[in-house]
Image 1 (cartoon, one colour):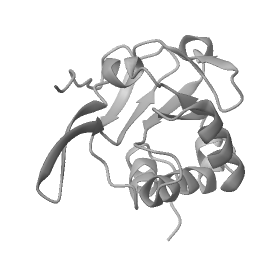
Image 2 (cartoon, helix red, strand yellow):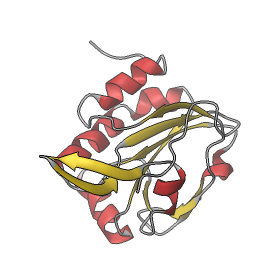
Image 3 (cartoon, helix red, strand yellow):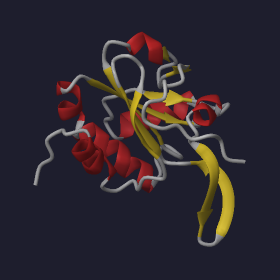
Image 4 (cartoon, helix red, strand yellow):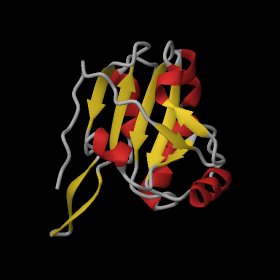
Length: 160
């Protein structure tokens, strides 16, 4: 069962989730600043590692434009801590084990891989403005090249 997808102009559903250290992070507490929320299927898998490292390597341009980057997966806190440590990730990784936030954002649904259909995390990214309104909602993005495409869509400098 797919959940309802969000669009630009929608108010971003608020949430509080624990980060890799178990510290709660609340989206509405970040109001006044811009936020990138991205959903990825599983920590320490090749595609998710590529995407996370691209965000890590592009953090300065996002931060210079006032963005906080938050990665969300269904992984347990301990796995997120290991992922962050292993790949020297410098932004919070949030644990959504009951999938409530995935579902609120429409980032949980039917996927297909090699002809098999299953339910899982839809790799998705949302840009949220200072008032908590979604300015960009991207679903089923590719892990590779996604961060560069996101930077172009947001008007952030892209090398090369």
